[in-house]
Length: 183
Image 1 (cartoon, rainbow, N blue to C red):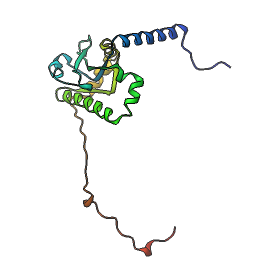
Image 2: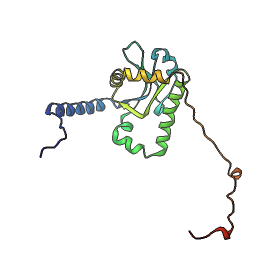
Image 3: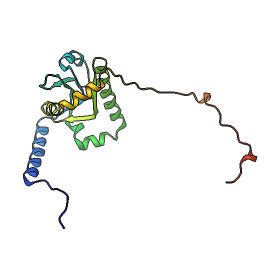
Image 4: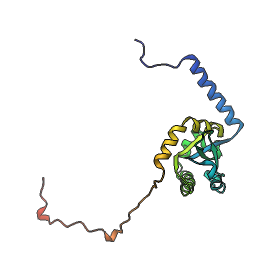
C-alpha cells in the first residue's frame, strides 16, 4: 500500500542538497554568523542608539534594514560560527555560564532598545548565515513584523518578583494528636 506521506520531488531534494552545500561553503569562507536580537521600526533613527551597544561575545551591535517604506530593521551583531553552529550550540546550551552570558547580553541589547522604541524580541540564539540572509527573512516577514510591532506599540513589559522573608511566613497550625485518625 502506498504511503500517504508526500515526498519531495527530485528537483526539490536536489535544491535542498545544493543549498546545504552552499551554506557550508559560505560558513567555511566566513567564520562569522549574523546573530539577531529583535525587529524594530524606524531603524534609521536608531543607528545612534545601536552604535555604542555591545552584544553577545562583546560584539558591536548594528542594524540590517529592509527596503520597505516602514523602515523595519533587524538589530544584529556578528558571532563566531564555531560557537553558534547547530552542534556547538547544543553543547553550549548545557553550559550554564555560557548560557547566562549570552542571555544577559541578548537581554541587555533588547532592554537598551526598549528605552527608545517598540521592540519585537527574537528568540535567544537566532542566527543567520550573513546579513543578506537576515535581510531576506526581514523582507519576507515584513507584514507580520509590522503588525506585531503595531500591536506592541505603547505597551511596556513588566517583570514582578515577590519575596517573603522566611520568618514572616505564618507557622502551620499544630494539629493535636487526638485529631489525627486513620482515613
